[in-house]
Length: 343
Image 1 (cartoon, one colour):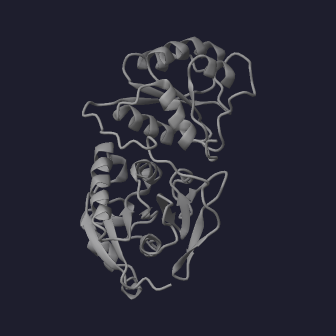
Image 2 (spheres, rainbow, N blue to C red):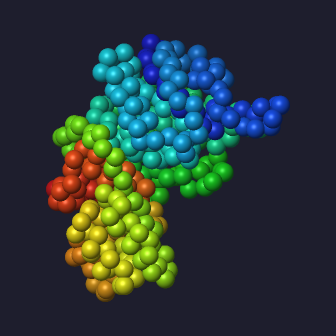
C-alpha cells in the first residue's frame, strides 16, 4: 500500500540513537536533533510520509522521568486530537524503552499507533541500526496495520507489544524480545506483516480518564533473593505508598518474610510478581508457607504476567490517580496483567 500523503509526528528524546562521538574529547553524547536523525535515513523521503518533528528531550533514557512521560503523552494526545497525524513515533534510548512504551500504552486511548524505537549502536559506530529502525517505525506508524494496537516497540524490524516486550541483552542488536509469545509481526517490503494480535488491551484504569495527583507517589520494588532476611522490607515500611514484590519462581518467598509482607499489605498495596520476567505468578497451585496461596491470603495482589518493572508502573499510575482501594487495584491488574480478557 502507498503511504503517500500520510502524516506522522516524531518525538525525539535522545538516547544512543542520537549519540555521536566528539572527536576532540572522545566522549559520546546524545547530540543529534530529530531533524538530523531523520536526514540520516536512506529512502525515507521516498515513502511520501509527511513528518511533524518535535525535539522533545535530549537525554539518556535512564534520566527520563515519569513527569517527562506525562508531558510527552500530553503532546502526543494534542497531536492525535488535532486529527493532523495518522500515527506517532517516539525515539529514545533503549535502556528504558520497554517501560516508556508500557507507560504510554496505559495512557493511550485512541486507535492511532504509537511506535517507540531507538538503536543499540550509536550513529558514530560501524553499522548503526538507528536509520533502519526509524524507517520501520515511520512505516508502521503511517500505515493502517497497527490501528487499535496501542503502543508498540520496533527494533530490528520486529514489532513488539508494549505489554510483552523486554530488553533481554545488554549490547546485541537483537536485544528486544517478547518472552512467552513472540513479536506481533515484522516490518518488511514497506509494510507491517502481522503474525498475531494480543487478545485485548486495556487503558488504565478501564473507562476512567483519572486526573493525576500533584503529590509525589513512591512505589518501591523489592527483589527476593536466596536467604533474604527482610531487612530491606523493614526499611521500606513507612517510606512508600505501594510495593511491587519480585518473588522467586511462580510467586514464592522464604516463609519468614510472610509476616513482614502481611504487615505491609495491611498499610499499602503490595503486588506479587515474579523476578523471572517470563510467565505469570500462580494463584492456587502451592500451599506451603511462603507460597503464592500464603501470600495472596496475606493480602498481596496478584500481578498476572506483568514483569516487576511494568507492574510498578501500573501500580504507580493507579495510586497517582487516587486509586488506593485494593479491590480496584486487583481488578486493574487482572484486566491488564493477564493475556486473556476477563469474562
